[in-house]
Image 1 (tube, helix red, strand yellow):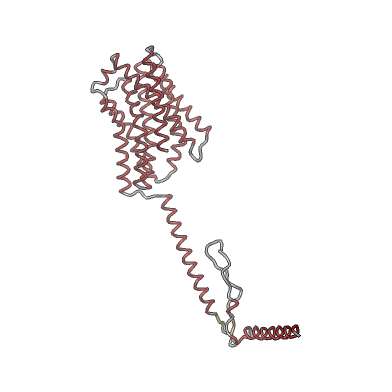
Image 2 (cartoon, rainbow, N blue to C red):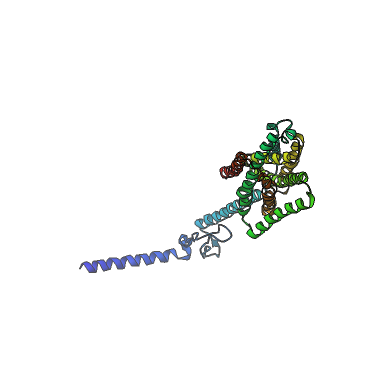
Length: 356
């Protein structure tokens, strides 16, 4: 009995649902809200919504009926397309601004300020030397102290090469190890050839060594200027941080440069002029970075300028200065010179570790 009642109930329910569906699908019954499509995904060109295959209904007079939900869906699709275009435009403008930063008057002023700090760093050692430095370093006591300064110069040059210049070159994204090695050897041999051709006496050898060191500093300061100019394009904070890092790195290097100049019989005034001349390389590098407004120059400079400079510094430290220090026979002086060589290497290594 119970099964008969349940069967009659299900038969009645199915019959009523059939009449309900037929009534909805009748042409005069109004729009079909159930046939509205729902967004199914994103198109490859942006935010596109897939609509259903049904675009509406046709009334008995042949007029197209668009349901209210369908109208809302079309309006929403248009809004999403407009928003998508705005977002795409904002992203493209931001990308252009990052790839090609603008060099405003403020950027130029900040960059010149950073370059002035780099220039002043080059003449700091002159103020801690005696007024008659050239005469003093020709005396026995002065010559011993000059050799101690040259020992520190050897250590700082080697530390600069193997802990700063070459690692920075190797870290470049497109670094070619064989090419880097060739440029380094070329820089080393170039200095050796110049010395063989030009230097005939010990004094001329000292002067040639000083001139080659000045050329190496000029090129090195040029790359520092590129870094300063590129950093200030990103903002004053980035520029000041990069400038501060370069100053910490350059101060011990400038001490060794003065020692090499004094060894070549430069007086204090001439040494200051020579250092100011090499500092102009930093100004030229910064101006190039601001004018060209691209990273291509910086990357190309890293690819060959730094290893070539490293080769020149290796020649100056190991070929031109160290053999002269090896002539020392005083055990105490030998010990002090060895300590200062390691001090120069440690100073450059500590600064590079701190700044990276």
